Amino acid sequence: MHELSIVGSIVDSVTESLAVYHGARVTEVRLRVGALAAVVEDSLQFCYGIATEGTLLEGSKLVVQILPVIMHCGACGADGEIASLQSFRCPHCGEPVSELRQGRELEIESIEIEEAEEAVEP
Amino acid sequence: MTTRIVELRKGILKKNDELAAGLRQRFASAGVLVLNLVSSPGTGKTAFLERTLNALREGGARVAALVGDLETDNDARRLEASGAPVRQINTHGICHLEAEMVSKHLEGWDLAGLDYLFIENVGNLVCPSSYDLGEKVRVALLSVTEGEDKPLKYPTLFNSADAAVITKIDLAEPCEFDREAALKNIRAIRPGIRVFETSAKSGAGMTEWLEYLKEQRVSHAGS
Image 1 (tube, rainbow over the protein chains, first blue to last red):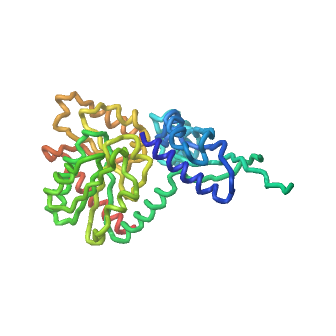
Image 2: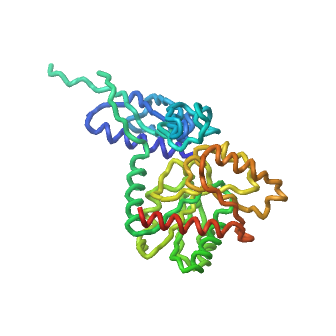
Image 3: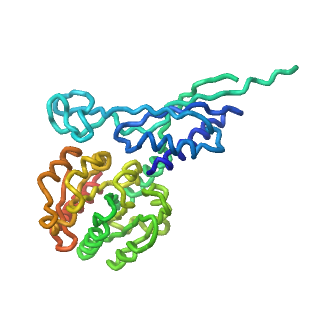
């Protein structure tokens, strides 16, 4: 349900970054979203169309890369993906996991923009 | 037209995170322990908080609360009866509290004159987990009427919690609440988490909870 707020933050953040690219428009926005970030891609996509209307992001494509949850095991030293979101245990030794190395990300990785060619004098 | 890729690597909630980091610093230098209470609607956050505020005040502690709801100031009025300063945050449709709302509602309060500040989030087990409010302790609450597998269904929230509170244990028997399953599920999602089994009605489990608050305050002051 908070995807609309999140998409609003994306629009603000991308618009801010565009300030140095005069006249550019956005064709694609790429996100990195951790599996534990509590964000649903379908909702993001749905809200994206609405929130980008009338902005420099209008008509752009939203690409969402979901990142698996990677833990570090303090007991055996292993790094790896947890078996499921219902069990935070080391897949190698079975000890409880307290340290996560990846899985909560919610970031804009990059944007693809189209810039107008420099105006050429006739 | 030329096309190019611009690397941004920017946190989407960076503004909220920065604001929350500023609040955390402010709370630490004021010496106030801040807790963020999160649960579904109807878990009994307000009743639990009411009991907590009363008990802390009786013990001489200085406490205050911010309560979040989409609409109405019913919860704030209810909590004010404890005598503690309480402010209502109405989000008008937003399903979670954000650091900016907290910051705005702290205006005029002397944080250094407080020992504990409780923030009761909007009833929701999904969205509040993404928004840091600058709290020291995030508490996830679960009532015996909700089903023991709730932590498995909402792993993000339970995994981000520092403590878990089971509420309404006076209703455990009529609800056929499976205590072992609930504890197992909470710990599967958040290994090692402290779990308190409480009833705001009978007062069960409150002694352990209050003891925990005191410990947290001491370790907070020392950090």
